[in-house]
Amino acid sequence: MASLLRAAATWGLFPWRGYCSGVRQGKLSKDFVEALKAIVGSPHVSTAATVREQHGHDESVHRCQPPDAVVWPQNVEQVSQLAALCYRQGVPIIPFGTGTGLEGGVCAVQGGVCVNLTHMDRILALNPEDFSVVVEPGVTRKALNTHLRDCGLWFPVDPGADASLCGMAATAASGTNAVRYGTTRENILNLEVVLPGGQVLHTAGKGRHFRKSAAGYNLTGLFVGSEGTLGLITAATLRLHPIPEAMVAATCAFPSVQAAVDSTVHILHAAVPVARIEFLDEVMMDACNRHSKLNCPVAPTLFLEFHGSKQALAEQVQQGYATDVCVPISRLPEILVQTKEDLKTSGLTGCIVGHVGDGNFHCILMVDPEDAEELRRLKAFVHQLGRRALALHGTCTGEHGIGLGKRQLLQDEVGAVGMETMRQLKATLDPRGLMNPGKVL
Image 1 (tube, one colour):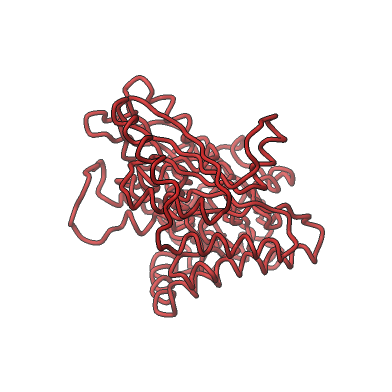
Image 2: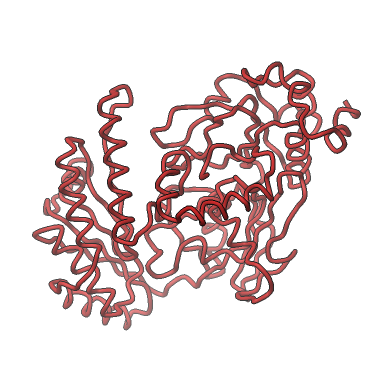
C-alpha cells in the first residue's frame, strides 16, 4: 500500500488501466479503493450504489450520473493527497458540497471519485475588526451566521438554500440581497485551492484578508465561478457586514408584470437603498396563497426589504412607495413581458420570480421528467430565454452557473475568443481534463 501511494507522485501521466478495471466501465480497481482508504480512512470511503447515486445528482433536472467512489476528507492535507493520487492515475475528480446546485454540476459524467467536503466544517479564523472570516467548505451559510450572531456581523449573500459557502464560491452564487451587498464574487477576499496535481494555492497569499489589491493577476476571481473545473476549494476568506439596526419589509401588488418591473427599475434609478426587491408573478402568488393559507392579491407583486437605522428606513419606505408607478426605459420590463408570453405559448406550467433589484429572475417550471415531449419543450423554452437575455446584452446565468445545461449559451455569450481563452486557462491548470469534466466548457 505504501508503494502504491508513493507511485501517485512518481508514475507517468496515463496509467488509467492499472487503477481501473476498464476505461469504458470506469470501475475503480480494488487497489485504488484501498489507496483512497489509506489516505482518509476506511470509514470515509464508500463504493455503495446508494451512496454513489446520492452523489450523482443535485436539485436540477439532469439525470443522475454517479461517481465510482465517494470520499470524505477531513483536512486540506488529505484533499491534496487525494487530488495527487487521482490526477496522476487519470481518475476524474468531482467536488461535492450540499448538493443544492441547479445545473448538474456534481454529475460524474465520466465516473471517477466524488470528494465530499462536508466533514471539513470548521470556522478557522474570525477577524471582527477586519470584517472577515475564514471557513472550510463544510460550513453553510446559516451555520456561519449563527456563529456570528453575537459579534454583530453577518454574511448577507442568500441564495435561498442553506448552501455551503465554498460551494457558493465555486458557483459564484447570488441571491436576494445582491442588490445591496453584492454577490458571492464581491464578498470573497481569498481562497485556498487544491490544484489538480495536489499543490495548495492561496489565491491572495496565505493568511491575507485585505479589501483591495493591485498586485498581479486576480487569482481569486479566476476560481470564483469555476465550478470545480480548475481545483478544489478547501477554504474561503469572506467579507462580513454589520447586522442592520433595523429591517422593514413591504409588499405591493400591481395590475401587470410591466407595471411591477417598471417600478423596480425606477426605484433603483431613484437611488432608493433597498436590500431586497423580489418579484412574484400572479401564478406564484396564487400558489403561495394555496400553500400557506394566505389571502394576498393574485397579481404580479413586489416584495421589498430595507436595511438601516430606524430613521433612514422610514425615509426609504416613503420614497419607495412614491416611485411605484413610474415607467423608466429599461430592458428588464421588456424581457419579463416577453418571457411571460413565451411561457404561455410553451404550454408549460410555471411561474416567474426574480431578484429584480439586480435584473435577475427565474422561471419555476413543473415538468414530468418521464415525459420526453415535455422535456423537449422545456429545453426549447430555456434556450429561448437564454437567447433573449443575450440579445438584450445580458447573461445566460446570473447565479446558478453553467454546469451541463448552458454550455452552448456560454459560447454565444463570451464568443470564440473568450471560449478559447477559458480553454487555455483550463488546459494550463488541468491539462488532463479530470477536474469535474464535462462542465462549463
